[in-house]
Length: 188
Image 1: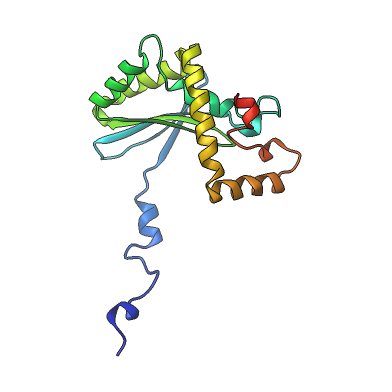
Image 2: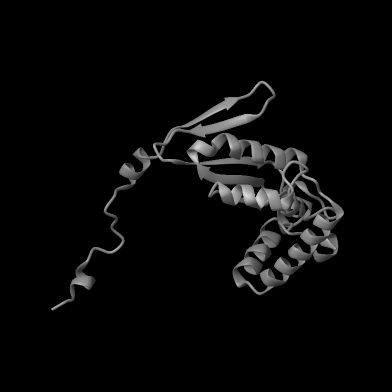
């Protein structure tokens, strides 16, 4: 007799694709007077995510500045005059929020997850970071050291290395072949 586990229907979800898609909230797009495009989704959840996605990434770079998008992403989160790093960290923590960023070949994103009631504060913090980042010399040096350490870790991650080689091969001679982090000499 076959065990129950083996008789189970493999790869069959209890929820159909159609049911899943019907639960995705509608995305509303609007444009502010200053040209900023805003995408919003209504949810009955007590949390929110607010983010800024910017069309900067390695595809918009050249050999001399390859890695600059990733570099800036790391140092922007170091704070502003209004929110120095320690104040920023305490404020985000006191909200029980999560502040993060990432850079890809196509874009750089800065986002904050928080309680929905803290949405105005999340917007204020993100807006300040993106527009008024202090970019002091010590912060730039700290960011440089962090990125160089991350680059060493990435060299030991087979998935990262293979994915970069895939892009180099598939997009030879174009900016899409550039790694997001850039070469070590550009970071230094």
